[in-house]
Length: 68
Image (cartoon, rainbow, N blue to C red; front, side, top):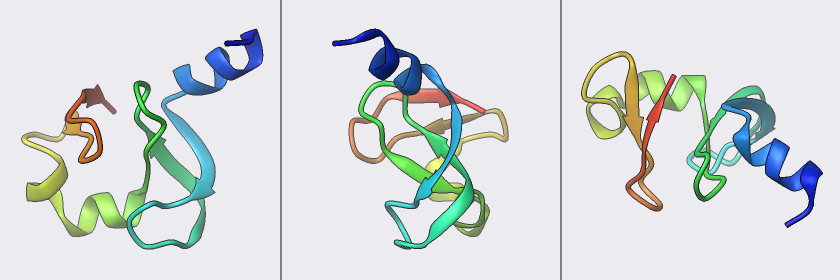
């Protein structure tokens, strides 16, 4: 894996297309393990699905715990 791709996967937030709603959003949270993107609106709309508290969230794709 090249250096640029590793750096992009380490970023927690980025602009992109949300995997939940399919819209292009300026702020999306990224899973550092698989690259799953979720926008801030979808995260707020389903807090029970993605977050057990307001600090962490679980990626529905790979079940990896991420911090906000």
